[in-house]
Length: 276
Image 1 (tube, helix red, strand yellow):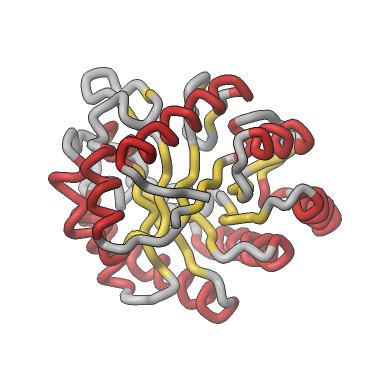
Image 2 (tube, rainbow, N blue to C red):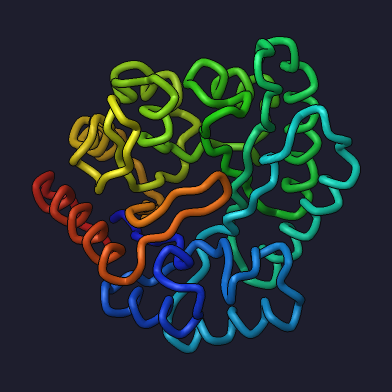
């Protein structure tokens, strides 16, 4: 059984509308990235508790803290960012979330990613160490312009850190936008042992435009079939980006979120895969 979740701020900045739409789609988890136009790391403890209470009352759990940790230049001082990461750990504690999404730092334009490999692996190791002590697993999301943007460097980070508290969130659309036009063919096998979470969106290789899962070059049928055959059990998080997509967030609105959910459910039905 696979479990659907989603970036609820793709629906609306308002918590009630987020929860309403998830409930209407029979999605019983949410990925908390922002609410009330505030990033999750900027929410007070009281606000976090308010979100947790409202979600619990609706029967919705928190699958992951969708943090922006690691979406800063690798040349920035690490100390202040480490303190901000500790706020993510606190959010995960309050929300009883098993995962925190992270990134592997922006590489300066015009520089070779390999020049910063040791610094990236060291920083990711520090984050993973604190996460492990807190009983949380970090999910590295492959993303544009960071060190871990393509499969080979994602594997390099995960293997280099070598911690069970650092795993992979598979994002086919982001791979396509980074020039990996066949992400399943060119990346799945090397990353499969690390994949614990999947972001649900797709992209067109020519324009990079984000589209619902199955409508782009993300090789979704192949990926779903392989995950199913391998016995994968985990979260599939809707991140549609169908109305807008920025460097730190995206937005779809209720109707387009429902469209993205419907497209993904159709893919699962076509594969004969059950979900909850």
